[in-house]
Image 1 (cartoon, rainbow, N blue to C red):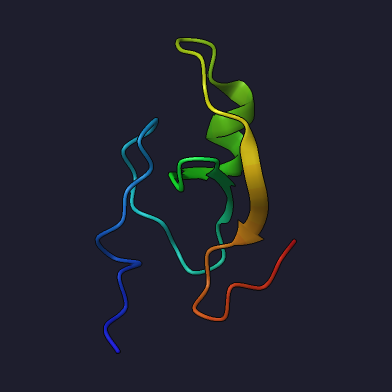
Image 2: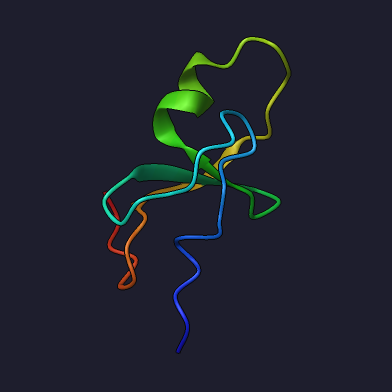
Length: 61
């Protein structure tokens, strides 16, 4: 299975996700850095579906 972590980017800060980044998954399945989600004031964001660590085994935080 191919890892997508090197290619997947946060839509707010445009940085790629690292293995241990804390991320949120919103209700339309968009992955966003946890910090970016809570500090973004430029636009309205969708509600959170779940919080997790961006790793291959998808452990919840």
